[in-house]
Image (cartoon, rainbow, N blue to C red; front, side, top):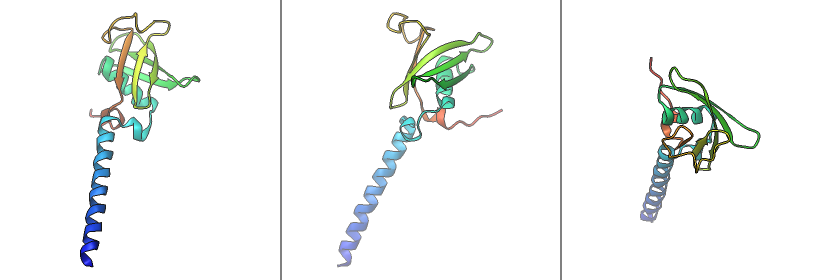
Length: 126
C-alpha cells in the first residue's frame, strides 16, 4: 500500500519539475509571455538592436501600438512606430515608410527583434 504513495509522489514530482523547466524556458526565451510588455523593456530591446550605447524611450499609443524614440550616442532622436506581437517580438519602422520597401533589417528605416530576458532583468554597472 505504501508503494502507491511513493508512485503518486514520484509522478507529482515529475510533473512539477517539468512545469518548472517549462517556466524557465519561457522566461529565458520569451519573457513577455509571462511578465507582459512594458515601455522600459521595449525601449531597452530597441536600443540593444539599434545601438547598445544609445538611449531609447517608448510609450503605448492609443491604437495599441507603441511609439519609441531612439538616439544613438551623439546622434539625433529618431521616432519609430513599433508593433509588438503576443510573443514579445516587435517590428519598428519610421512613420510614413513602408517597411517592405525600406530595405533590409539592417536599414535605418526598419528594425525588428524580440524582448529577451536581458531586457526585462537588467543589471546596470557603473
